[in-house]
Length: 364
Image (cartoon, rainbow, N blue to C red):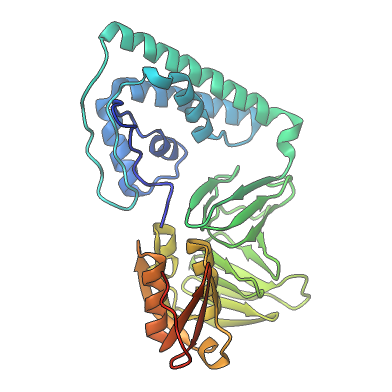
């Protein structure tokens, strides 16, 4: 499966350089502990890169103070990278999130005078990029709602203006309301996401899906939606209130360790069952424990772009217990079929699960 944290490799014959995507995530506070350690180690031994990062930090703080918005540090550093172009010849920071920290490959390099000139230009580009971003975010059009999307198989992280963090699952869409943080903190979700919310009693944080409203009471939780309106909420910290959209019925309160599932406007709760495995998808692993096939089908579509169909009612009522990390679509489908005692019939990107003996066609 693809993920934006994959190692960036230089083109053949070109000197490697720093992994600015990893540095940008670190600067925005979005790195996991392993990636953060790799970046800190890199910056400790590469003075010019560290100077650029320090400059971006200073101007980010100034821009946030003036515009009351979070500056998109990844865009700022991307602008710097575009400015640097082919003149870059710094060593490469190899990082894989969730894996072992990469080693810096110190090779190549430039004469000191030319390198100093390049660094000055890069720093100037950083100032210009941040100034432009600050002016943009201060302008009236910055009040428009913001939309984030992920492609099939690709996760992403989003830092909201109040410092709340969102990990967006593959094939998902998040819309942040225009008035976010002013009168309320509302977002819309289609797909799946993990939310780590900054508590603000005066401005409740609410996730709206097509069929549910999930209100946070200062916590961290994951939300998964499906095409048929099923919504699953896993609470890892704090308290969440879950109810059907537009319902006048009192919401169901979920505490740390609870899983709430909304089906046809009714909420069922499993108390104290949520573990780290239930949110392992934020680290690139799909882990199921007695999961409904509705949840599994939605994940297979988001992660692999495959429409998994289960027309047989007996099969559809079964649950899945399995784990996948880095497995191909073919491997995942075969394991699912084996676990459920089913056969697979594939037609392009559509795969049908059916009872054994009906006839099968192994996925390619």
